[in-house]
Amino acid sequence: PRSVLDLGCGPGFVADALRRESGALVTGVDAYEPLEGKLDAFHKVNLETETIPVDPFEFDAILLLDVIEHIADPEAFLINLRNASEATSRVRKPPVMILSTPNIAFAAVRMNLLLGQFNYAERGILDITHKRLFTRRSLRRTLRDCGYTIEKFLPVAVPFEAVMPGSRVARVLGWMSNVAARLLPSIFAFQFLVVCRPM
Image (tube, rainbow, N blue to C red; front, side, top):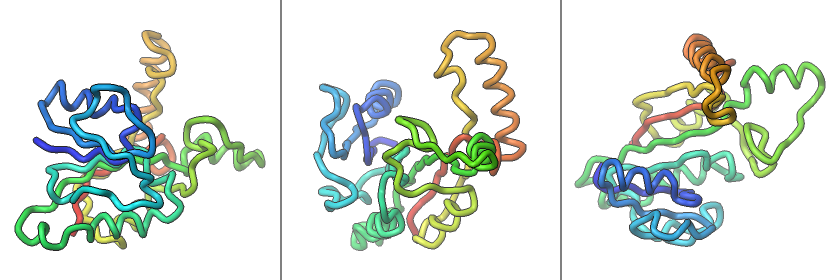
């Protein structure tokens, strides 16, 4: 894509990689300022309570990476995003949206529930700031009910190599996790990555 809207851009690392590797122009939206020079444009907006100040249909792609689980009413957010620009959508193909969110039905979470534990943490699937959590089925249903056509629905394995960089054990565990996530995504996917378009 030549132009990307990064909703919940955070520090801007993904935007910066997109700019460097594909030459895309990236506009970020977040409640917190990104790092200097990571984006082409930035709007300071609380996605949960404020309106997005740009027309999402003017972009080729929309990124919504690890965002919807932080929103109390993700259905309303997704519907508002889809309906943000009726005039533009009539003359232009809707942008592709790339969305990711953790899998609450991940095997480790299920095991903890069997042991009677549901402990929030500072990061991960049970991040203390998560307001809504999704399974594979509930995420598909939410996107469909909110008016999105799913083009790809991909399981994401546990990122062992990010936790233990350069470790041979991490590479082996990562490979095993990837195979398991592909075979039984509902149980072994750490999160889901969805490519979809607003209808």
